[in-house]
Length: 141
Picture 1 (cartoon, rainbow, N blue to C red):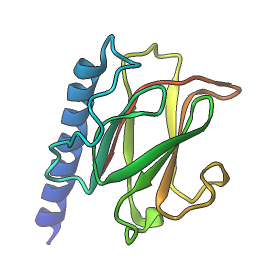
Picture 2 (picture 1 turned 60 degrees about the horizontal axis):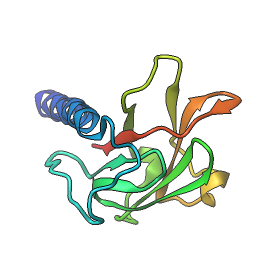
Picture 3 (picture 1 turned 90 degrees about the vertical axis):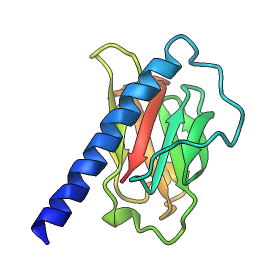
């Protein structure tokens, strides 16, 4: 059983890394441009994944129903599958090309910025007291 669990973990990590590399190359230089709505991501080992532009528009996704932007540098990523328990998920997010000065943070619990919804991941980009709109990729293995 440990080998199976370890194998799944490795697959999820590789899927997240691959999505980060692919999304970085595709989004370079086109932060405001979005692919046609509904463009699908190929992520066989992910329950949900998305490439989100700095303006909050979805570049492409799988298992994500919408992204809203309640404030500068703050995003609410709503999952399509309402049965997924956010408190049991381990989402991974990566900033697109940016300086090392900025970071990305994910709330693993329902957050007030997103209406305390149990099906929505709160993502923050920038740094404390200096939030900045940044494009990012997110994967929910």
